Length: 481
Image (cartoon, rainbow, N blue to C red; front, side, top):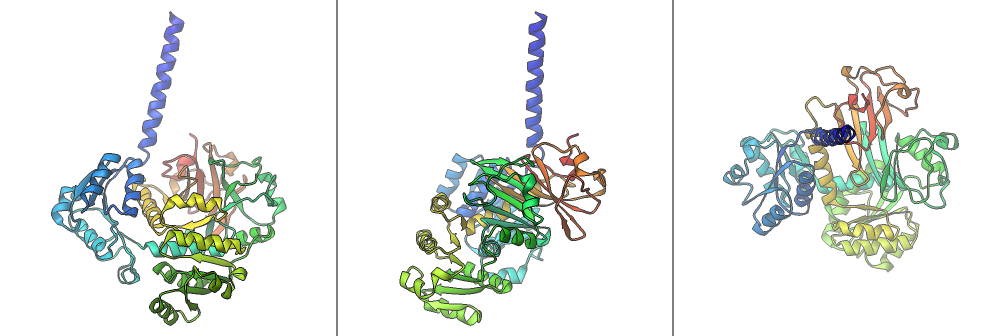
C-alpha cells in the first residue's frame, strides 16, 4: 500500500512539474493585444503567426467573408469595417491595444489608420508601405507617431542583394549593424565538407567561421565538435563577410556575383538596382513595357536596360544568359518567374533567384535545384514578426536582434552584456550553459570574436546566442542555474 502511494505521489509530482514548465514557457514573453488591419496575404500571415504565439489578435477588414473565415479558423476576434474609421477602431478596442498593424494593400490607408490608432491610444503602430517617397518623407519614429514603416519591395531587394554577395548561400541575415553575417547554405554531395567533423573545420579551412546550427532531415540541430557533416545538410554559419568569402573561396564556391540579369521592371527591381550599384555589381534589366524601360534607363545610367520580353529564349541568349553570374526573376506572375528561373538553371547560371508570392511553389523550386526564392509578402511578415517578438520580450530585456530559422524551431539572438550578467571574464567552457544552446559570436568594440571554450564575455559585449529554447530575454537566461 505504501509503495503504491509513493508511486502515485511521484507521478503527481512529475505531472505538476511538467505543467509548471509548460506554463513557465508560455509566460516567458508578454502576450499582447494586437489589431491587424487588412486580411490580404501579409495580414493573414501575420494573423496566423501571432495567434499561434498566443497573442490576443483582432482583425479588421471591409470584407465580411474574410473576417468570418478568420474568426472561424483561428483564435482571433474580428471587426467588419473601414479601419480608417474611428468608430470601427473603437469597436476593436484600439485604446487598449499594444500594437496596431496597417497591412492593407494601400499605403495611404495604412498610414492614416496608424495615425488614427495612435491618437486613439494604441501604444505602437506599424504601417506597410510600398512607395519609396513615403519612406523618404517619413522614415521611422516620425512625428506622425508611426513606430515602424515596412516596405515589402525594399525588404525583398535587400534580401536578394545579400544573396548576390554570397552566391553559394540560400539566405543571408545580418547582426550588429552588418559586422556579423548569418549565412545558410546547402552541402552538396561532392563538397569537401562531407564527412568532416566540426572540430576539424578550423584546421582544414583557414578562416574564422562557426557552424552554429544545422538542419538534417527536417530536424534542427545545435552541433557539437563531433558533429559529422553529411550531404544535403543545411548549415548555418556566423562570421564576418570577409571570412565567409574566404571560406567559400577555399571550398571552390562562387565569389560575389559581378554580372546580373534582372527580368521585370518592378519596384523591387528599382530598389535592387540601387543596392547592386552600391556593391559595384553590373546589372542588366529586361522589361517589356517601353515606358518602364525608359524610366529605368533614365534613373540608372550604369544599368544596361533592354526593352524586351524576358520569357523570350532568343532574347536571353542574345543577352548572354549562359555566361552571366546570376539571374533574378522579378516578374509579376509566379509561374513565369519559375519557368524563366528553370531555363536559367538549365543554362548553368551559377546563381538563380526567383520571386514568388505563393509559398506553395517553394518546395517545387527546391526539387528543381533552385534554392533561393524571395517573397515580398513573406519578407514583410518576417520583419514585422521580429518587431513583435522584440516588443513582447519582458520588460528589461537585453535582446537587440532576433531571427528564427529552420521552420521557427531555432532562435538566434543578439544580447547586450549588461552589469547584471555577473559572469564576466569566466571562460565559456566553465560556464554552466543550458543544453541545446551555443555562443555563436562575441562582438567587442566592433570586432567579432569567433568564440572557443577559452574566450570570455565582458561587460558591454554583444553576444550572439543560438538556441532551440524559446523565451530567452536576458543574457543571464543562457545559464542553467
